Length: 195
Image (cartoon, rainbow, N blue to C red):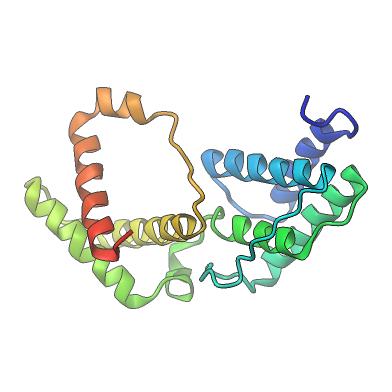
């Protein structure tokens, strides 16, 4: 309904196929948000309301990864063909940043994405969490996955991009202790990184 003069519904389906064909894994929440943000970019293109703000100062992980650039180019081509207008350079950079902070990376590649000291800091916070809730320490794989997740969350925060969890209230109701643990961990994280 937002795109009366274009075939955007078909393009969203094609966009999903482009992401899948490029062998990126993006969880459902991130994919939904990525598609929503790309739709917003398309809507701005259609109304000639181009992005003025650049994302070049953002420390997005693997932003120069050729697979991400290739995917961004395919998405840009799709948008340009759908809308019939050229994508601005800032909007292209926004798409690269959105992809970079949406994809899941393998835990083996963690140190190509996240600084060792950041992982160490996350491990310290998780140890505090374990001590507070009298539970076993997190294993290395869990620490790595949480560190990667928090690194990407910090990147999203830097560009004010939020991925709300539609299950939050249900988790709070059904798993109050786990919810409380998440709040405690986030408090530690926000205090440590002043975000």
